[in-house]
Each structure stands twice: as C-alpha cells, then as structure tokens.
Image 1 (spheres, rainbow, N blue to C red):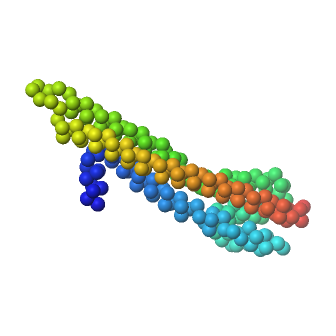
Image 2: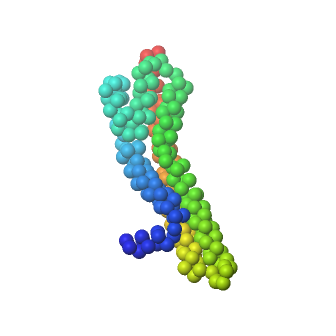
Image 3: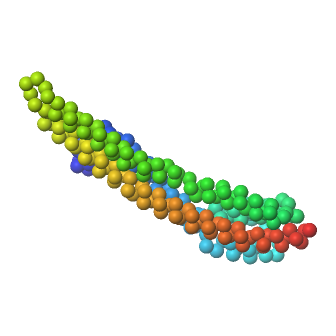
Length: 214
C-alpha cells in the first residue's frame, strides 16, 4: 500500500484522472458482468415454459406480469402476449412490430454503459500521454539554464517519474477496459441473437390465437 501511495505521489497530478477512470471502469465491468448473466437476460428453458403454459390459451395478466419481471427475455415474450391479448385479430406484421419494439428496448438495456467503457479504453492512453507530455515539460524545465547553476536534478527525476508512471498507468487502465469492452460486445450480440430466435418461435405460436379469433 505504501508503494502504491509513493507511486501516485511520484506521478503527480496527471495520474488522478487516470485513477478516476480506473475506478469507473472497474465499477462498469462488475455491473455488466452481473447484468449480462444468462439467468438475468435469457434463462435457458423460459421459451419452452411459455409455449407450454400458453399451449391451450393465453395466460392471465398476472402471469404475464410475472413473466415480464423474470428477465429481459421474459419482457420480450410478455410484449407479444400482451399484443395478442389487446388485439385478438392482430396481424403477423403488427405482432412482429411489437416484438421488434420490445427487442430494441432489450438490446438498449444490454448495451447500457458499454459506450462509456469503450470511451475509457480509448481515453486512458491519451491521459497517460498527457501525463508524459507534462513530465517532459518538467524535464526540459529542469534542464533550462539558470544563472550560475545547472538544471535541478530533483526536478529532472520528478519529471521522468511523471512521464513514465502516467504512461504505464494509462496502459494498465486501457488494456483491461478494451478487453472487457470487446467481450461485452460479443456477449451482447450473442444474447441479442437469442432474443431474436425466441421471438421467431413465438410469432407462429401466438398467431394461432389470432386466427381463432378471426
């Protein structure tokens, strides 16, 4: 701990924005790891269970509300059930539109905070570069000729520390942030595909009730 504090002190003020970025990035990574779990987004057997429950008739509004609160996939399926319940003679195009609107809202929730994490991954090396430039300015300032004296060695060493520590810390923040950003992007694409497939399975199933009503 003492070593970390001494490094932060040696790096100077430019490291503080990087520290803030590291804290925010860590919080975003933990939140997305929790939120993008399969159990919270698309439980494995949920579609089959909904198909079984609605095999003979549409479920009650209470059951649909519980389904919507189950997960993102549950909310998507609930939107289709509500669309058929609200409009018994609903057409296939209208039903698909209802699913698409719910799907876009679900994908938006899946992608939440990812842009911020990507921004940190991009900005952290630039902040490290800023610290490097500031350190180099202090180095050249220490080397400037003064009346009857040469450059200040302590100021020179401090400038080198700022330059190196900030560059290293910027990369330390950026590399994990970029890796998790790419991972979460792939995870979102996979989960979005699962939601799309679930909606495709539900459309012909729900249209049976529309045909009966017609």
